[in-house]
Length: 309
Image (cartoon, rainbow, N blue to C red):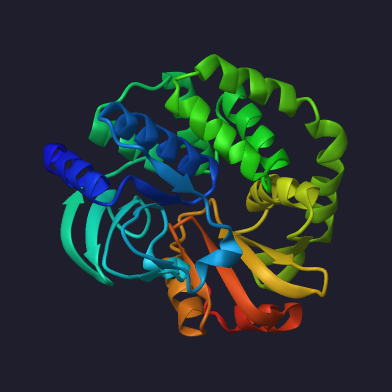
């Protein structure tokens, strides 16, 4: 089955000159770097970019390999595109014509989209780094490297230069340089981010019984770095946790919903999409993108949700 997926990817990349658009999280960056290495290795001059979350609603793509950028993120598919994803169903590679799937290769379960790409392409990667990426995508820190590299990424989360740097390091198999970068950046964490994490945990508010939320500034890198660790700490205390990002005018921009309990959040994302928001993810975690919603309106929408028990 992976042989058919490889042929599909190779033929598509040659026809559309190696255009890749990817989610900019750590998992997406590693998957993109692996794709870049493979496609360059077969003589394709790859172009890649990471659209910001605000770009996704209404973004029209045509002739792209899309890494974790499904239609539920608000994109418009035109012509032919390939989606590589492991959310909202089995890990898969799908060929779309406009918004219809015309060919699909299901790869069962994958711990991350990077793990999916490694399996499909049978490509070498530092096992310790792949394990760290898998942990991060599942919301875990089981090894020191996973914690270091995630915190380094979060400290630079708004940096397009960081994404390009990591993509090229992965494409070049420069694993030790990635680890050294993570170790260096991680040293900044305690002074800059820990106080903000503690603040978010302290200021979390009850939305409905068993569900809490906190508010952070989407345009502040320290706030964005503190968001995920605050979510993870609050998940140990409550069933479901929501982080809501606001802009300088206190308008809701984005939100993340997460749980460590055996609760299926996919029904929540379906309800939010019916309200007109971009929303999607896995059973335990996912994101929401708002348009023209004040913070109060976004909170009201969350209160309208029938939260799973």
